[in-house]
Image (tube, rainbow over all chains, first blue to last red; front, side):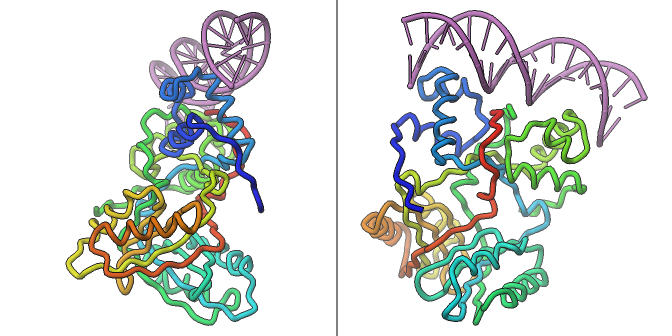
Length: 160
Length: 160
DNA sequence: AGTGAAACCAGAAGCCC
DNA sequence: GGGCTTCTGGTTTCACT
């Protein structure tokens, strides 16, 4: 996975930042912001996709409005010979799992969970303990979340 | 923030899942998948946006390809009278901070950092310690990351 | 690489069921 | 609430610089 860095200029970086904030801006809008025409912007974006700098486009969902109101972090500790990718693979099968981070050091992994209520959380943690070779967990309730990626401007224009 | 839950049916949920995977599918495509016409899909999406279930649309960026190859979690401990929102506000000003979670329990907050190298990480942690009323930090290097939101299908079709 | 004009096609709106 | 048709306008391609 030794991806050498593509050559990007300031315009590319500005486009990336704009698309991260709102991936549905019009090509002409983006062009106005960075000082290019719409076709030029399109070719830039195509290139960024081809290079793998942009890996996809996603809708930001407010899971609280779907009834999944609780969030928690669970630290996982595994038996010694567990491979990192197995930890990750086991955890991400659960729909409650939003993110998995394998780490160097004491907890072997951090799992971010989204659940509907405490009973649901208990079930999810039980599942985690069952799957794989977990030797122990420690769970931390989340009181508030802030994500840079979620700092999108509201879905006003909606070209797509 | 007591948002009562909007009434969503299975089609809504299927649309949300599809848009989370790829927010740039054509309305007609989405309609084919869920068994509706394109205008009907548009009305559904408009409603989901209006309800605040969909809060935005963002491009998924591979920060490793931008040279920000290292990731870390830093646990923050603050002096007793620090307000949660102040913790969050202080951390998110740093460009290195990707996510901030305030928690109930031992660490007061978890901060996910993205940096270019170890020197950069040291500077970011120093900043965190300076800003706000941090009494201590403990940092964990991340070996691998998996995010449900990043499981987008590649940017093939590109309507917008 | 970028611009500008033209063609094409997806999205938005109106209307009827 | 959904489908169909029309029309608007953004995206895309092409020719040129």
